[in-house]
Length: 113
Picture 1 (cartoon, rainbow, N blue to C red):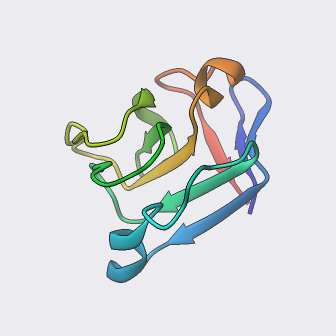
Picture 2: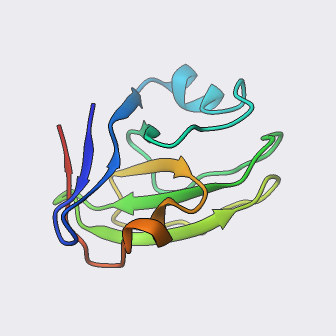
């Protein structure tokens, strides 16, 4: 799957996978040592995350039902809990630094294809 920021016309990821079951969301990125540039994990449904027992920092987007960015976490470190983003329908976990590199901001429109 591909994730595109329509507002800045940039590709956030071209190798995204979806975690849409309880087990897949529970495991998330815990079995990984890193996320490579172009990779992403879409957690659906999701309004908050944690990075307990993770080995690396990530960037995180929270999108509403219209795929607009309502929450951003840049370089979110291991062993942290995110705020709850009421109204979020999904979260996208990306390699740390992706949000800054792509100039992704609150209110941006995201396309997942």
